[in-house]
Length: 298
Image (cartoon, rainbow, N blue to C red; front, side, top):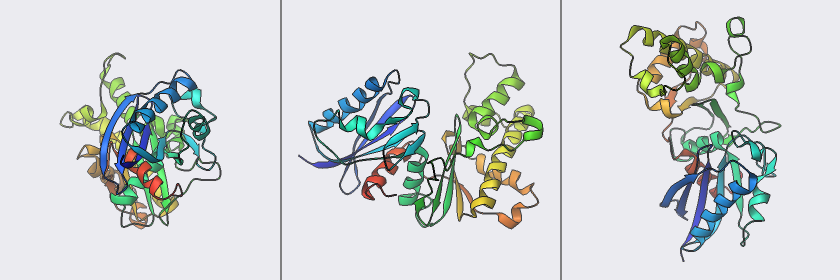
């Protein structure tokens, strides 16, 4: 049987999987719903997929892109994002004890995996130092210095969404509240008097740019995103800042952020290129593959 590398990108809704040959080429991919009721339910889903792949391929290694604060040395999910039953769980240990074959398994935070994908073959492949900022339900991110992830003393580096940037007006509201795609949707919902059950996507809001009130909502939101970008630029002085998340596919986004940044009189002294990520939905899996290739030492 062919020898492969198996990667998982664990999210709150789905667990994506990707099978790669030893040259890094895709062989198979798919997704299964994420069971988050119990620890056993979650690992049963992972093991079921691994056993299925074992019937057709010889697995060499496994890579996991995982939400939350991840101790990459021990394998403990200190906090596991929306997967609350897994808070404090040693993911590597729990997985290994359920497998009949002992595989080398590597784990990394999902935003860090997205950054590794960009570092390997995306819009950061020629860089040594860059920052990744993801805009989604919350704000995520990663710091790369000398082509290595900065994890921080307690594996919490890159939690940009916890920045407080508008204390006088918004008190302790964080960038999760103000600059995420959810923040944009909440502001739009409030201004448009939408009922909670009325669903709207950030990308849909961006498509209403020609409507003056919507334009103001988007512009105000982009100002908060620009604050995050500026603060990261003055903190890290990176070669580039990459923007990810579903809304980053909207072509108006980067021009809006740059326009907001130019309002800042200090931006000229600290400006760095701001671009979108090359990879979107596949970034977690590709980052996990790169993690395997580096022997877990990304």
